[in-house]
Image (cartoon, rainbow, N blue to C red):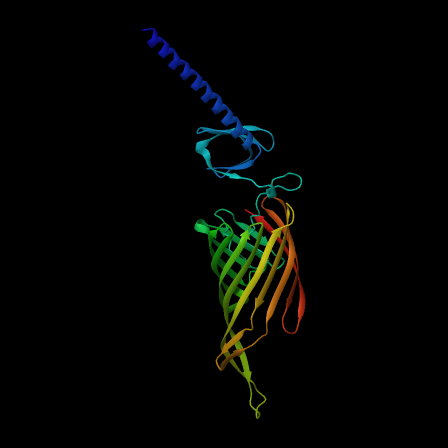
Amino acid sequence: MKNLVTLVCIIAGLQIVNAQNTTVSDTVSQNTYSNQNTQQLYKIIKTDGGELRGKIITQDSREVLLKSIDGREIYIPQHIIQRIEKLDATEFNQKGEFIGKDPFATRYFLSTNGFALKEGDSYILYNWWGPEIQFGLQNDISVGVITTWIGAPIIGTVKKSWELDENTHVAVGGLVGTGSYGWFDLYGGLPFASVTLGEETKNISLSVGYGAMSYNEDQYYSDEYSYYYTAHTQRVVDKATMFSVSGMFKVSTSISFVFESFFVLPQWHQRDYGYGPSSSLIGFVSPGFRFQQKPGKALQVGFAGGFNDYYIAPIPMIQWYRKF
């Protein structure tokens, strides 16, 4: 009987010690988790689209305790959290203010790249010649409209992107446009493909496309015995291969260096009386900088030049990006 009582006491004692050790271990683990998390900044995206940024103090299956950037402690129920993302140091400017990832990383000056414009990440781009609007849709598809301040021409865009791996993105798309009221019989299209190597803050891209443009052209004829000219209207189709090599990288938390080179190989005219070359190589080169001091806003300035076999002309590039 004494042996039985002694055995029961030993078992009970071991259970108490084990429970205490487990409690201590859990406490240490939670403290370690908490300490690790408080060194990392997070962005919590809620199901209603709202965002909160700060340090996660504690987290369990019911709620998250967040210490926001302005010092408040906020309890957030898990059922209203859509996802939690880690924030990188490059998403803050030199003053420590949050500016986020570059929402315009899908663009250089004129050309796009393999990165996808995510659903809801729409923006408007103001150029000195006119506006451009791009909309991010589901399944990494984006659509947009490009025009001038007078509404002619009008060009529609569409692009579909794929992420092959963390540092390789590809896209295919097209541009379709019309001369609008300024040139009713002008229309054309440009299918293209892009491949981008690198990440959003540091990358290089190659884009290739083949475009065609069709319009009416008036020709005037006369013979050696007449002073009168006869007008004849014919349909002309211009075709050309285009390619672009572009890239960008962040030089500081709020400034990125952007480079773009864009080339149009010799065009070909297709007329009623024949088919042949009509122009020389056309090129566009623009190094510049993108300045992003606030979330969803950026200013881009380029020192561009356009050229062909005979001329070189400077082209000022000033662009304002606004996310909406």
